[in-house]
Image (cartoon, rainbow, N blue to C red; front, side, top):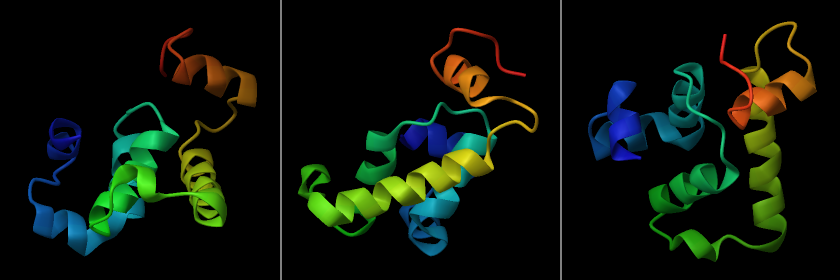
Length: 95
C-alpha cells in the first residue's frame, strides 16, 4: 500500500490523514490500481487506528457502499459492467 500511495503523491502519513481514505483510494483507482474492497476498508480502519478485522456488520456494509461508489466513479465511460469486471480481474487490457 505504501508503494501504491507513493506513486500517487501520498508519501507521508500526515498527507494520508489530511486527505482521508476515500480521496486516497480515489487517487489509486484513477492511477489504474485494481479496486479491492479489503484494501479499501483496511485503509479506513488504519486511519482510525483500528485493527483491519475490526470492521463488521452494519459498518462493513456501509463501507462497501462507499467503496462501490468510489469504484463506479472511476469506471471508464461507455464500459459495461462486464467489461469493467473483466478489466479489474486482468482478463482484458486496461484502456
